[in-house]
Length: 175
Image 1 (tube, rainbow, N blue to C red):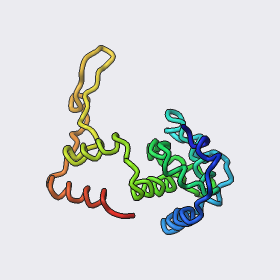
Image 2: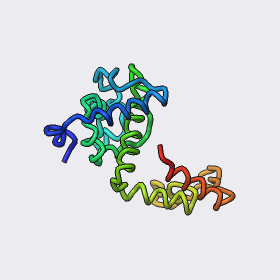
Image 3: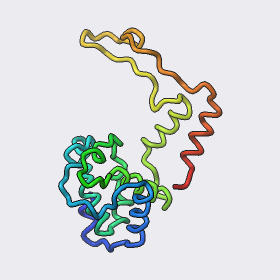
Image 4: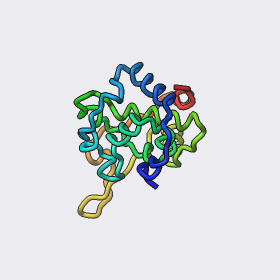
């Protein structure tokens, strides 16, 4: 089910719309009502190319006040946080900030976070990295390690307990 399917019967949630716009103003970003749907944000979106995320449509739904549809949709979790939408927007609307606010609202309302996010957090807590250091396979079908490519070693947190405490504080912090 897509967001468009959900909006046909949706009622505007003006209070939640004001809350998101207030968050955007506090972040010194422009309010979503300045968006004139040029779709420049979508044209550069990495998630649009792969997962059909359309930031300009999310901003349009926010302008219409259809917050519950957005918060309950899995599409908000597909953002790759590449920040291209922010860079490309001529009105400085920053759809990525809207997506962050929607994700925060989803978590605050008790919606389950997708498994990939929790796996990533577990990896950060255990390794200090989003994923373990990978080896690559060359065209000659040989496996090459990072140091064999002349790349510097990746540093991991020196004080694991302090690092884990900081990550957990950030992860559980109310926004």
